[in-house]
Image (tube, rainbow, N blue to C red; front, side, top):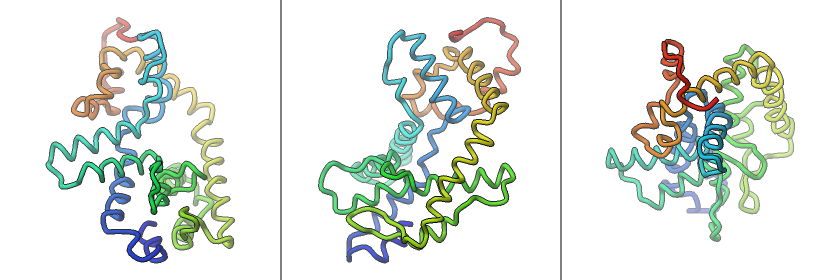
Length: 241
């Protein structure tokens, strides 16, 4: 999308560094997902933080995007990657969808990966198309290639041609269908809560509340934890219940 926008942006406005920053943000925006994906941050962490700390703490509002930013900084430092601190801040802001409060001439760059204004972004193009394919839906209800090709910059915001309105509607129609039939389907929801409860029981053993701030440890919080719990012979509750 950033390459397409560059064809129509004011001359010299989209720099090579901008293309790289948006590309990195797109590649890494979900790298911060831990075990059980959204269930970990929306259910496990919030409940664990509230019960163990007996108060609402930053852990209750932590998100996988925070982890993505943390891991980006860690990777750059560990492997001596030549990216400036200023560009790292921009990439993290693009992952979060946080536009700079300064008078940035290219604020639309912060709408590409995560668009907080209207939720039409490449993150949704990605997971809606991928999930629809993997659960056997013949196709998602939109053509992201046409949306990207028709994207333009108007008043410092990303817009789409009116003739593609059905594709914009299709993004939300696809999301609704997946939420109704897959993500929030009763069996799927029940399994999510059972997995969440199992992760809660192992909360202090795997030190979630500590490791979400320690990149070297955080990368170990993968779905392998579920196998460890499944094969554990311990009957002692090590988290909260």
